[in-house]
Image 1 (spheres, one colour):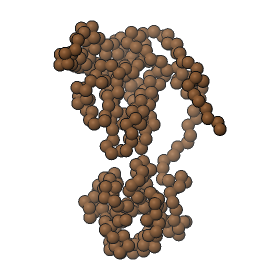
Image 2 (cartoon, helix red, strand yellow; image 1 turned 180 degrees about the vertical axis):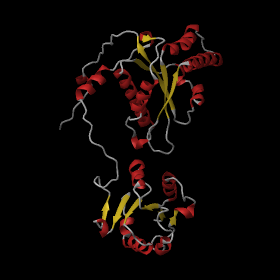
Image 3 (cartoon, helix red, strand yellow; image 1 turned 90 degrees about the vertical axis):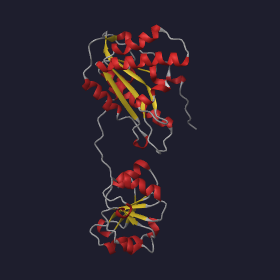
Image 4 (cartoon, helix red, strand yellow; image 1 turned 135 degrees about the vertical axis):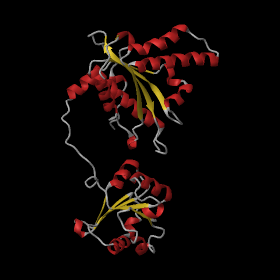
Length: 327
């Protein structure tokens, strides 16, 4: 297995280890000097190299993006080039092991060598928040959809609340931290722009496809967005070669929308997620910057409510929807 040395490790080490690790390179030799760590990571993956480094950054990449490439974190303190080379040669078997991450230490760092464990993963931690389960239950079970007929018109929501909703969306669960959600926010004059866009596209599609053009539908497309304070387009953008199933990215985006929903309802706002209009119109994909498996997943309408009354919720018993396996 050839090794790719980070720029903080001298290129001279390659000559010392060439017999044991033939074909090894330093990032400068392959045009990666000064490049972002992610670019180095991708090059190593595409070319079958293991990355050797002093800093913890590549360990974090391995935790996020999995294997390959293999990463070798040297924690040797102040060491000469010859010492590093001799150390690597002495631990050839460890380097060729199947572990995706190897942390190699010398006696000065209190251990000879360690595999990565949860106790030595470099990460940022925080004190566990003091959650209130009563408040969590209250907001989840109290979330409601309210539609345009229940909106208070001409009384816009402050943008700071919309920004808070979107920030909470950004904390949805996401496999490999791909964060596939994207949003476009229409407000003020932007609402008319969106309304005209979907109305005219509806008309164009009817003419092109020879389907019925219904004036009432056309007018609805032109008028409904204007009754909202903000309309948020919901997009799912795929990460190229992530290996994540499309279903997981759709689910992650839906969970981001749930966070938007919960935050809006916590502010006492009227809102709903709809999948009408351009959502499934192929002609709209380019306009929303969608490619390949990207998706337009609908539009989130939000406004202040016209009434102080909150809708009643209704759900069937959970007992009818769950099976337990105990043996």
